Image (cartoon, rainbow, N blue to C red; front, side):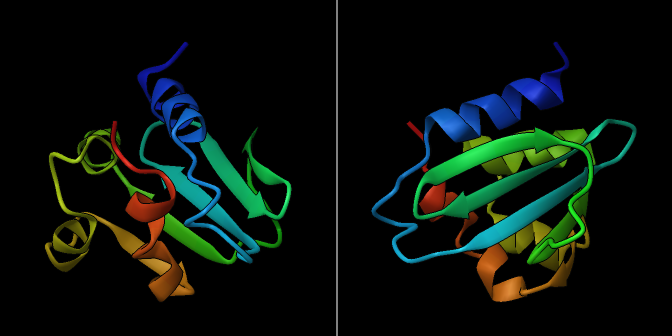
Length: 105
């Protein structure tokens, strides 16, 4: 299993349904030099799929180190975006809620 896949599995395990209340979104992750994944959040919870979604609400592009740092809490997602480490396309405000939907520890 790749490190990137482990990060996504960990995200799904930490999913906070209360924070995602009434949210319907597809987060597409394009991680440099890795497989693509997308996370679907809706009333039934969240699911992780490998590949690319045609209906992504927001697409986030970054390298694997940035993904790990943001999802572990070592790096603030907004700071990473401002530093150009994350590129976002689509509903960028939704991307700012990622660490609330998938909290650390």
